[in-house]
Image (cartoon, rainbow, N blue to C red):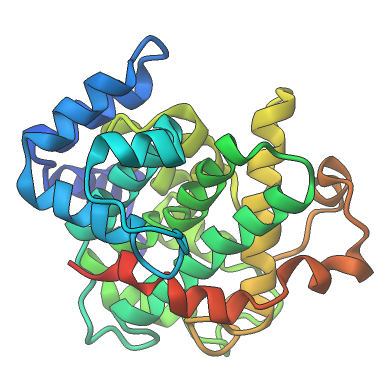
Length: 286
């Protein structure tokens, strides 16, 4: 029996609430007038978040030449945007614990795929002229792109497992089956979660549009949406994280055009992706 949209959307309210520190960081992320000192103060009030952010900065993923021991130093070396995105992304990942008895993938496999998409989107950004200051926006957008699936896995696992089966209507996009079964697909559902959590628009739009790569007519945001879409298609193609082709995503020619990428050259944008994912797995630790 199919569910109606309202039944599924109401589960968003059951997802874990953020701590007051994370809520403050979200507010700062949405305020273009926020100063680095505001971010440092907000994170410093939470020893656990401080330790998490510094641990990530000093991980193999960032390959810092010297150990960073203070948030102030971290902001100086990596910039306000990077630290903001690390704080937001790590908080979201830590708050979502996927059940590991789901039929088609474990929580670890789910997040490994998401990590691959985040790193892949960042690699596209780095190779298509996006400034270093903005590249981590691509990473976090990719990392969080599939959060809508969490609702299905947590609250409707049997129904979601059935439509995720490769034998279920082969050739029909899984988002079409999701829409039929739940009244909403996981991309739109993820966008609603991002809106409830007051994530910035630079995360909300790529999450909500990563399957269709529907553009919004804003150059910077369209490039971000396209990069997450293309990285997701590639990670699916190489079975990164989630094994087996549980869904077929049609690579958008419009996304490739927006990025200025020729499809046959696509693998060259993702050199050493799997090694970089291994280096970044600290993002997935509590």
